[in-house]
Length: 361
Image 1 (cartoon, one colour):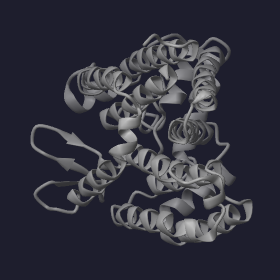
Image 2 (spheres, rainbow, N blue to C red):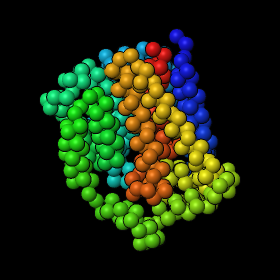
Image 3 (cartoon, one colour):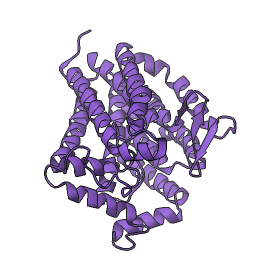
Image 4 (cartoon, rainbow, N blue to C red):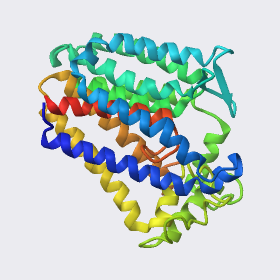
């Protein structure tokens, strides 16, 4: 089956974002890679061989599989994702880094199950909501199974702890519930309930300090506000066209997490406002393309899956870039396609492969 216009656009955007992300990671990770691994291109090589290549293979395979197969496998996929989440608490497999149990180490590979969970939640909720009509979704009892799944997932994420992923999964779930035809009053009540749960489960001194830094970046420039100040220096130094590719000064022992949460600051410093705008434009085009595929989808599962994917990408992009520009408090959410992390990239490319197959039908 030939690609539609939206399918071709999606393929081009995925290719551009993947290549652009890999190129910028190669620049952002030079100093960090040399310092930590004695290899300037450690992050580039690792992302290429363990993220980009497997991700593109899964993107191709998923694009060739009829998307309705994912609807049939929705429950097993969710069970597998939850099983992987449980593995982080098993001493033989769980890997703790900086006090958080978010990784599974199988010896030959280390990955974050929470990344796979995002895709599993999108697949399962799209299948579950898609199998019910909008009239059924407007009934209060439709909330019960949805809340049960969300509560169990929330428990596992709180225990890790991984509040940022919990917030993202919650947002995806609420959005899909809304797109499936839920009443606005139910949505507002659900948001209030989940907001209270997230608020009480996420309280910690360092999160309070992030809010302080957001409200007043000058409060402690060498302490709680150090990260945001270094990010803003990088963004401000870029000007219109940037200081040049590979010439960032902030990535040299100043900017925390230059290959992770802060990579957008490196992009703007090196490529300027033009480079930052190009990144935003690519994301906006990708999201609009996914929304277009959703609108043209012939069934509810295809529509909800693609919308869920769009919400996922938009939320991570908005929160990451918004935090770097101090529009919202720092949260530690990576920038899709650009931030270092093979688990995230592989899962995202697999999901986009499903969206590509939906566009074919």
